[in-house]
Length: 469
Image 1 (cartoon, rainbow, N blue to C red):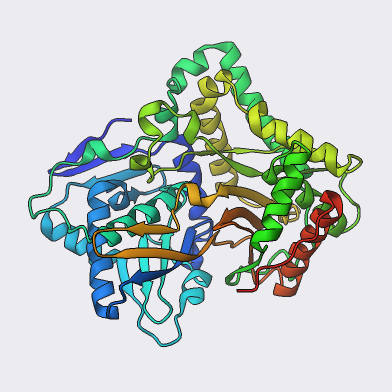
Image 2 (image 1 turned 180 degrees about the horizontal axis):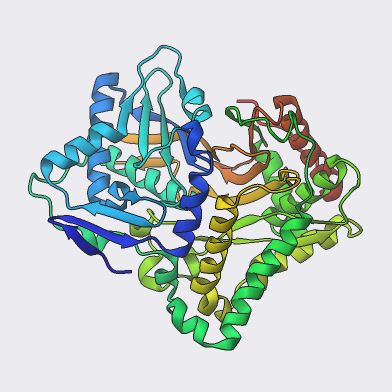
């Protein structure tokens, strides 16, 4: 999609299909002043040698500005629900951007969880530094970036911090060409009009979206607090982390069964949902989940220089309640490997996302009539895989080193759904569930994770100890 100069130095373009979908979702609860499905990533880090907090804050701000030079997508702003805008940088505008996006929270007790709990609507990303706990918190809308892109953004930030890279000189170049294209452009999908003109592609696109919605019906649902009219509360998170030894044992058990760790976690999620869903129990379970499209993009767009973009797509694999754990895990492993992707999928992508956005927009604007359906309360799933591939635990520069000692990722949740993230970082597997306090209690979320752990132990024949550090 080409940028158009709307006024001197100000450019606009249409959002891509996936970008528009995530932008629409982010504004679902606009009246609350909070964002739905906003991404956050928290890292605890150590500097060697140590330096005063003020010096670290200054170095971080400098690295943040240098990162904005490398990844100008960090300064793209939304224009309504379907446009992106970008103003060519000057020294003063970049300084203003840094003032609007970089924050030092010097409170003795860091309010990190409060920032996430009340995740605000923002047109720009935010980077919070908490000196008292040596933590960074990165917030970014999902229409701007995906989970792995977030990890790559922070990886580059820590690399710049380690090398003490200064910001670019006062004369900023025209960097419009460095902004990453939409997923539809990056994967090489044909224009929607071209796809619609081909009956086979148009039929595939419609059936793809219809199947997505049919499978989503089988997502089940957990019991929730409140009534259908209860407004959302604060975003919350519960997590459990396996020890390195247990993570190795789990990975070995999966390898022996020729299934992936993600597929095993997904199968355990399905079993947990079957057990904990209220009657009548669903016969099938489908977890709506994001899959990484970055390896499928055209080669020019696969690198870390294209971290700031949403390069994921949604799929809804379904498994039956009468299937065994092993059967579910084997089916899901095959599905993740090749079961969802095809050249037809690429040809139909732009048209399919257009159909999906139009249906969502129509539902959002429709006036309520009759009895409203029960709000969905299913558990969604996303796997980051081995985070170390995208965010190195250690960065070394000339006279400085940065070590990342803690990692947490999630999204703001304002619906009755939960979103489960699975990842491994520094040799430890973590299951982390995001939910809203108005609809689920912490004890419920922790019980959900404990049930998943028990299922994995029973089905894989391994004992799983928690990391208590």
